[in-house]
Image (tube, rainbow, N blue to C red; front, side, top):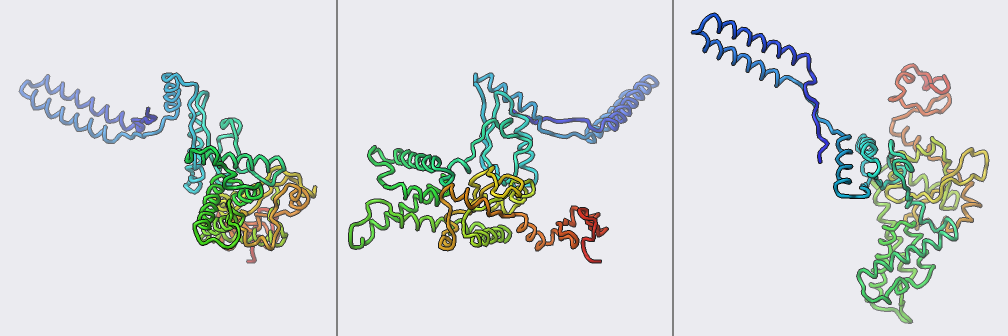
Length: 414
C-alpha cells in the first residue's frame, strides 16, 4: 500500500513550445530528404539529433511534484478491511504530546487522521490535556469514545470514587502478582494490609497508574531492605509500612521536580503555584473555565507541568461559590509527592467536602504569571494606559503608532 503520487508537467506552457520546436525540425528533415537523396542520411541524422536534444531538454525542464494521496490511502485501507474480512480497522496513536513542539506536525497529523478515518476505520489518540490539540478531530465525533484517565481515578472526588480507586488498584496489584507468582494465596493484602496504606499509595501517585507502580516498587524495595537488614527490637513489620510508602513518595517527588529544574519558565510557574497554595494553606485551587484562562493553561510553561505530572486536573465543571466569577471552575492540584515538604504548611485535600466548602473560593489566575514571564522575556509590553498585554511582534502596527488597540491610549511614553 502506498499513497505516493506525482503531478507531472506542471509547466505545461513551456513544454508546449518545446514540442512545437521538435515538430518543426521533423518537417525540415522531410523537406531536405525530398530535395536531395544524397543528403538523406546526413540530414536525417542531424535533424534527429537536434530533435532528440530538444526532447531531452524539454523533459529535463518540465516541473513535477510528489505528494501523499490521502484518498488513495483511505481506499487502500478499506480494501484491506474487505480483503481480510475484518469488521473494522482501529489505529491507536500514543505519545501524541511528543509532537507538541514540532512546528505544525501535530496539526497536520490530526488532519491526516481525520482524512483516513471513516466507517469501518477508526482511531484512538492518547494525549495529555493542555499539551497541544486534536483539531480538526472532534471528541465524540471523529474520535467516538473518550476515556479521561486524568479524571477517572481521583480519590478525593467522592466516597464512591475513593472505593473505586481502592478496588481498581487492588486488582492492579493482584493481576501483576499473578503473572510472576503462581501461588494464588499471594495477593495484594500480602503486601498492603490496610485501606489507609492503599489510599496513601493512590494519593501519592495522584491516581496515575504509572506513578502508582513506581511508588509501590520503591516501597517494596524499602520493605525488602528493612527485612534483609538488621531488624530493630520489637515485632518486625510483616507488611509494607506507612513509613516505607512515605519514603517512596518523597523519593518520587524529588525525581519529578528535577524534570523542570533547567526550565526557568516552568519553574517560575511552579513556584507561583506553591506561593498561592501556601498563602491559602490548602493544596487544591480553582481556575475559571473561560477561554483566556484555559488558553493560559495551554501555554508551554503550564503544559510542561501537566506533562511532567507535577500539576493535575481533579474536577471539571464545578459551580463557583461566588456567582460573580461568571463561569464554571476547574479544580487543579499540584502533585502530592512533589509538595510533600510543604505538607506541614498546607492541608492536602483528601475529600470532596473540602472542595465544596473551601476550594471553590480559592480562584487562581494563570494569566498573571504568564504575563509576567512574557514581559520578562521582552515578548509583550503592558499598555501604560489600560495595562493590556501588547505583543509588539503580532501588533506591530499598533506598536509603531503607539496606540493601544484595546483602549486607544498610548502604549508607552514617547
